Image (cartoon, rainbow, N blue to C red):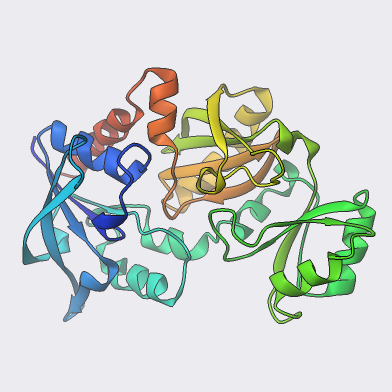
Length: 317
């Protein structure tokens, strides 16, 4: 079968050809003979309650300085395409919210990955709090005294991060006695006006932060993101290196715990962040790492995703 897949994402000028998961999925879909189209969030509209989009067909090339070439634009009804990928990078801001609300009428009719309602309900930091048995000790608060007391209670070291943060931005290690302790708390909580997530510091982070990619609740595989010397963050965008990784018993337990709720919420393509056997985040907006994982494993994991889409679309027809 030939499908029409629409990727709602950032401008194609932002694509990094050897890193971007979106590019890998688009290229693999094209390789399998499907039509791939691109749209920005601002290209989505509602006409009498029917979602429409201003799209452009995309052609991919790994050999070009312009990896994605777009054709002329056309206006289509989104309930007439086979599947939609929401791959707009965080932050999940007001525009992201409006996008999911405009796509809401497609639920139950067109396959959307991930489900618009699921995206609205699944803040990538707070969603993990549905599974406290899988997490390190965690506090969500805007109160400086509560944050300092929590830091003391978990041994004098904790990690603070903004609830709407992404890509390692705004993450600090809190240490008792550090002259910057108050400044870090004030910065992340904006002087106590915004809640932040504070978690017990896990020394295993120096070994690496494991990214596990899930497809329909099943693990595709994993990579280990190792922080650069002198940095507490392991995110690829801030200099973390990537090595091969396998799922261990603790990882499998986490996946088993999350699977029912992920299914319930329509969160099909998900990235779990695990440090030392503890779940720290659940990435649902634009999970990354599939290209690195495919290279290290010698398996085309992006092909597995497109095959899954094909099966799901056939089941709906």
